[in-house]
Length: 75
Image 1: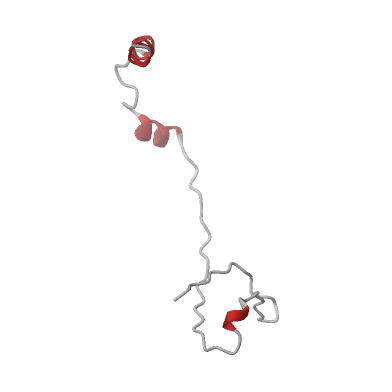
Image 2: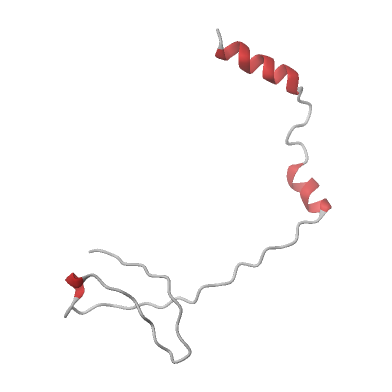
């Protein structure tokens, strides 16, 4: 069974307009309507940033990492 997904907006009059595959003409279908939730981005504070990324590059030497990478690449 094929599944069709359309993103559309219900008009002020309550109408939904979609284009359908002609293979669906004169067929019974189920219509499910899900309200799209608004994604609310939280403002990232300095403390949140530090908590998230603390230790990500802890005790690393970028020059040594670069040397090791190039050494392995051009063996």
